[in-house]
Image (cartoon, rainbow over the protein chains, first blue to last red):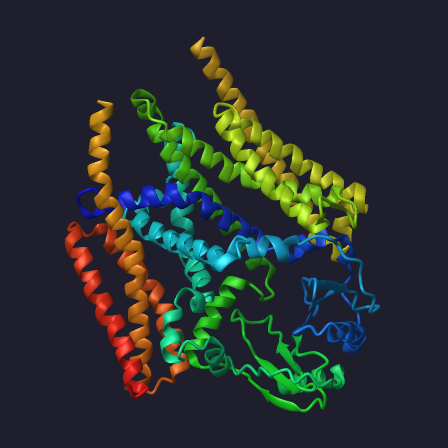
Length: 511
Length: 106
């Protein structure tokens, strides 16, 4: 341990960054993409590239699916209603074989073919907060640890930073690479500091009940459901086993809208479908405020009678809902959405340049002392940064290559996409450790090639090329993703070119 | 040279491991204990309903934990760090469970 406050903070900053930076980069990168998760869905599942429904539709069109869920004795039946970003209705229930997800076209009521992908909302977004590690909630706890480390990094970073005001205006791209990476680290760190601190804190606060269960355990005798019933007013009926009907969906929806002065609806959720004690929960959509409200109305399923409803929340819970809403960005504001995306990318640059600075300041010393630290951390950095980007783009490419209904080795199409992601990511680490001299450049070239291929494959398989995408409002998300992929490809190609020039200069010098 | 480095490394490693466990594990245990105690105390001493107190202390616990993490790595005396964390941990968890038993009449 180092002596002195600033020195100890320097130690904390350095080592928590080196140890957890790879995990943090993955979380930041996936979170940045999750800002546009529904747009990614539209790109990856061409059947939901629908124009926004022109007229209001009848929820009764979902009754056939509801009957299927009821016959399968699914514990729940959940319907996500269209929003500005999402034209299709999303339906989810559970069968013996597992969860069933369906998209429904609100214009025609037709059930759309299974896209065979987890897309942005079911792969990228959950990866961001639980890494798809479900055993014992380990994924949540790893993300929580990384989140606490990020806040500690923010605090220790400010403390070790001597000239925070001067460096705010300092960027010296013409200087040595080490100076440049530190400047870039400082610029993204200082400019993004309020955002990075708050986005991390709010992300942790969303899962407060998971991370600090002690508080509700001692007040509610360890009964999680008792707490949530008290705090959120949830109505959770016990299944009777007797069959029961379901009143008119539209009548209940109309009643819910009336309760909230004509506000739009976000979801419809049935507990115990098909049972005599089924309860229909209808949630309110409020895209005009930051806070992620949980206003809901509860109806008795068979009779359609209103059981209870809530509007507005108590002060502390409102603060929690505000922080959650600040993180979830479900409000309707495109410029803010892009700012979130940009600041998320700044966070990725911050983490990557932190690694580069660590490497550049130790490279010579480690070579003299014969230490392997630089080589190990460099492989970790390459795999975590360019490897993660390649794996993500590989996920998009394979999505456009696999035909609908494809399966191999007992894995369905969606699982094959996920396998591709992880195998490509793993391979990038192997490549980075096997060829440390050339890995950065080669992975940049791979990234550029694959990102361009993704755009080309989208054109070939769906016909929605960039110009077509730009000329229809409902294809803007597709065009936007194509543009970002092309910009990413260009940046990767420029980086690869520069790296190859540098390595040629080095070769000439060494010769 | 290599061997001296290794021996110095081993002597340095143990305090670092102790500090990591104290700051990360101990810091978490103390913040969770303080949250539990405050969640029991606040509804009794103020007009705040229990459900609100639970959410409030859990959100604040993240900041308490952050403070403990920073202090855990800044405190020069490892012994003092461990002692204070252990003391606060015992008092907070003991207090919280004591209040639970008191309320259930046991």
